[in-house]
Image (cartoon, rainbow, N blue to C red; front, side, top):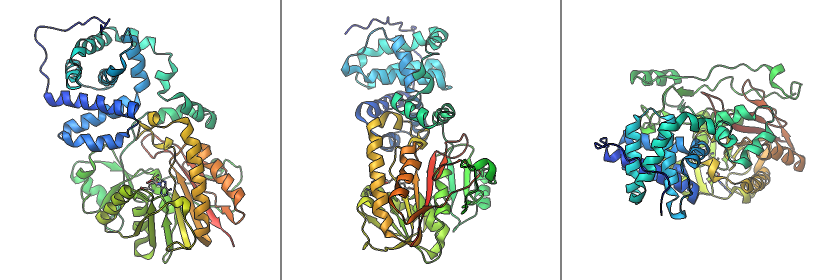
Amino acid sequence: MTWTVSCLADAKRPPKISPAGVQVRAAAARSVHAVRAEGRSLTDLIAQNAAEFDQRDAALYQALCFGTLRLLPRLDALTALLLSRSLQPGDLILKDLIAVGLYQLTSMRIPEHAVVASTVAASRTLGKARATGLVNATLRRFQRERPALLACIADDPDARWLFPHWLLTRLQAAWPDSWQTIVDACNKQAPMALRVNRLRTSRREYAALLAAQGLSARPLPVAKPEPGRLDERGTMPTFMLAPELELEHALILDQALPTHALPGYMDGLVSVQDASAQWAAALLDARVGDQVLDACAAPGGKTAHLLERGAAGINVTAIDIDPERLKTLQQNLDRLGLSARVQVADASRANADWRGAPYQRILLDAPCSATGVIRRHPDIKWLRRDADIAVLVSTQRAMLDALWPLLATGGRLVYATCSLLPEENDVQVRGFLQRHADASERPIVAARGLARNPGWQLLPESGSGDGFYYAVLEKSS
Ligand SMILES: C[S@@+](CC[C@H](N)C(=O)[O-])C[C@H]1O[C@@H](n2cnc3c(N)ncnc32)[C@H](O)[C@@H]1O
């Protein structure tokens, strides 16, 4: 095929590039391609590929994948301006390689000559040696014409919001006054949050351990409920459930680092868990002697938190439909010195003679669109489809209805999602309350997030927690 972009192959003396740097760019392009062309999850791809590199290059590979997927529509809009004809179907990976190159030029502090040389050389690694001229010309033209090209895409809504249309439309409908802030928060990097294992250490001691290694971390700011401001329903609920005023065991690291580099990680002193996810255990509030069912438990972040909070006094059954993810759950419990009954099971087919039933507490951390955690998983924007939402809503409904008979009278079920979409959250729970006369909602009043009717919606917050939804449901006789 003939490329119409002229090749401006530079200089007699090509800059020195490291072979590993070239491999990193090629791996990032392959991963971005696997997400958008094959629907692969970035988490799986990183687990598969990062081990090929040393720690520094693995960090660069991850940064390229995350950053490129986060900014994809902007990078694609620039690529469309730079390429004067479309690529052949067999060459589409070059679009991803160019996106990886443009991401580095627009958003990273890497010397530009190294970016261009390594990215161009990566086209050979990808088996596209004949395209080196195209990649080189494209990236160099961007360098030369940067202000004009950026001006060209300044009014392009895709390049501005960086979301697929269907999802942007849903967020605009759900949050007419604040969707811009929400979308911007989803497009930023999330902080790394920790949960200190209170059975083995305290937050103060663990912060000192971090400081001894030159790492700084901070608790979430203490927040006091202000009922007048917080209850959007205008009245104080009769039964106010104010979760712990702050998350007593959460720390936000000022600088992310690989999990295995956390001091005491293998000794079970700490786990990596988003701050918003840490409300589940407080809201469930399991008491000594309770039978507790964690119905969608893997990989076990919340199961472990329940057990740390309840010490030896509660009996937890952790189920999940995915046996592989349950293996990770078991490894997490082992590392933290915790134990639960772990079982592969389908929560949407639960029945009342199940082991442990009736339960005084049930946590349903349901499979969902994960729109509240897009900042941690930018591939979600390109993997999810509009039609998935209806399927998820119906799965969540089936799980709620199947689990409810397993709850003891006077017991509590906490429904949680990491979704920003009302269909999966307050609309879902409202429908549930209409179907079950013996169910009532205990409103949550807290200084963070928004009271919904019913439930509590946390939005992704800069420097703090992810988007999450919680509803506390109680059973009367
Ligand atoms: C949001 S994740 C749970 C995260 C987990 N609670 C934690 O804190 O680590 C949802 C889980 O639901 C599981 N799942 C999906 N369908 C299920 C079903 N029908 N029955 C049980 N688990 C299911 C998935 O395998 C996934 O592990």
